[in-house]
Image 1 (cartoon, one colour):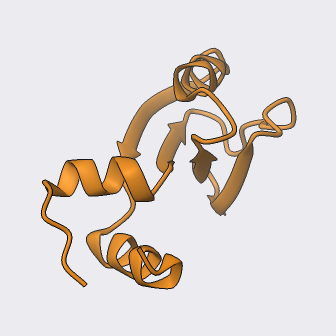
Image 2 (cartoon, rainbow, N blue to C red; image 1 turned 30 degrees about the vertical axis):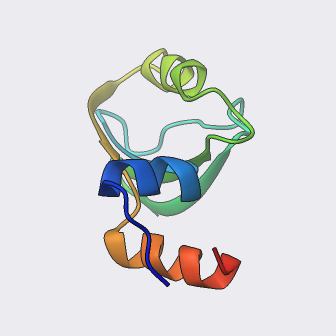
Amino acid sequence: MVLDMPIAEIRKRYLNKKIVSITAETENISLASSSNLQVLELRPFFTKVEVDTTRFKFDSVLKDITALPGITDLSIEDPSLEETISTIYRRGV
């Protein structure tokens, strides 16, 4: 299988999710109103969530997260290249 396109285009086309790491002033942040997030990691003062961008507008989700009290830092990531390749092979593109 050969895909002749930039990595950014491959990720955009085949992986429709973003990973958001959230650091907060408080030990636990409340994501109860954000049912569009899948919690990947939860520790005191730190939460990592995944957003399915095929189901939810990422800018709206980000706006909801930044509106939470006590947020001190956010990091937004794309899934790893390994996960991208694995997804492509699973889908049989």
